[in-house]
Amino acid sequence: MSNDAKYLTDLKKHLDTVEYGDITVSFKRVNHKTVEMIPSTIETVRHEDTEDYLKDLILFIRALEKSEHTGKVTLELGWKKGTISTLGYHTETKKEYRG
Image: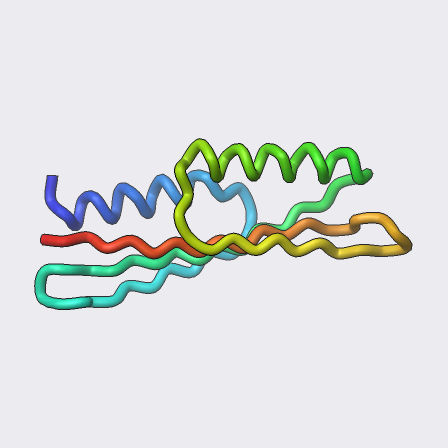
């Protein structure tokens, strides 16, 4: 399998894991044989109560563990009157593909 197919396959897998949100992908040519791909994702969810947010947060952390995520993860909580109103996940992963 060529490197082009590998990074495109990885990108498709990443896109399939995001149900809702913004995905930005940047590519950088490191040298004539190496390409760096950096997908950045921002997902935001809304639930009816705090328990649903906690369940979702645990599922998200387990998914990161299962996928052996390497990279930056930022969690963003929106609060309204002492209750969580939104939960945002910001992830960024950098991976190099060599030819």
